[in-house]
Length: 319
Ligand SMILES: *[C@@H]1O[C@H](CO)[C@@H](O)[C@H](O)[C@H]1NC(C)=O
Ligand SMILES: *[C@@H]1O[C@H](CO)[C@@H](O)[C@H](O)[C@H]1NC(C)=O
Ligand SMILES: *[C@@H]1O[C@H](CO)[C@@H](O)[C@H](O)[C@H]1NC(C)=O
Image 1 (cartoon, rainbow, N blue to C red):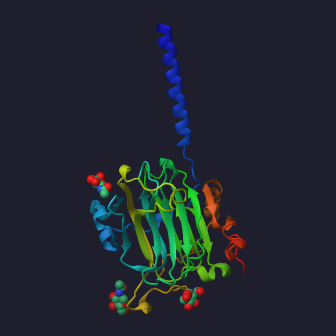
Image 2: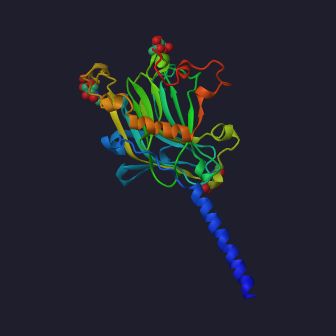
Image 3: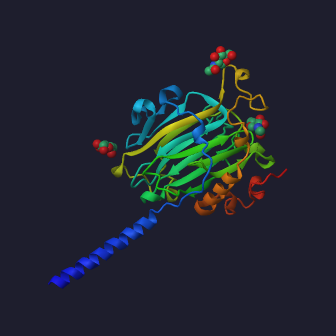
């Protein structure tokens, strides 16, 4: 009797430790290489000073005087907020914590766009977080549209090297005349050079900053096979450490806006460290792309039998 109990206990113990090892391996986050912290250089903005409601206002909650904001998707509505100003180049960043547990069909987005002002030839730079039926598998999609180039989606998709539902992580966009860089916790994951190949599709008109949560049932998870399940909702994402530093566009007096070229520019993303990636940043980007990128439009020959121009140079300037 005693020995049976012992054996049972031993088996139970072994099982528990096996499960623990397996789960700690699954949750064992790889350590990213060291990198420069660009997000440390800019002030955090309060909601009321810099943002305004876009839609679904009842699902937006300001926390700590607006230093943190939660946005909710429930069975009645998603919601979103946008910047009061439009920017002509800049650095845009948010620390985001995504909805935990089952989140198939849910889309959380942090992006800059001017589709409300230029419906026919709009520009857009996107972070889109696509929910999943397994907690850890939020996918990060990045995308760019320039001057209405919506016929060519320039998507790249990544898994994250951490669980984005446990803590806040920083997602940042650098956009200037030299390049567009997407960064996750200050590690560049994608760089789009403003070269000859991209010139017609390079975002180059003032844009507003947006944060939204919405129902992407028809496409977000496995091409629409997994719709939002409102029984396990509501789905809540938190935003904090909001940063927008750039050339605020003065619509009434464009000439009074900061210049986007030349050494006299007042644009905070014109300095050396924003012109090109350092070697350290390039190593970080290589690390992120080699380990975590699982889709690039540049590799999608089914979709593009003739690859877009910029893919042929693979990030190198074609000039
Ligand atoms: C929406 O959710 C609320 C709260 O969970 C619930 O009371 C309500 O019945 C739901 N409505 C629909 C149309 O499913
Ligand atoms: C952007 O689109 C507008 C309208 O379609 C066009 O006039 C303009 O030349 C385009 N700009 C670039 C840089 O291609
Ligand atoms: C825009 O420019 C006008 C004219 O120079 C100025 O009066 C106004 O304060 C400016 N607005 C902003 C938001 O900077």
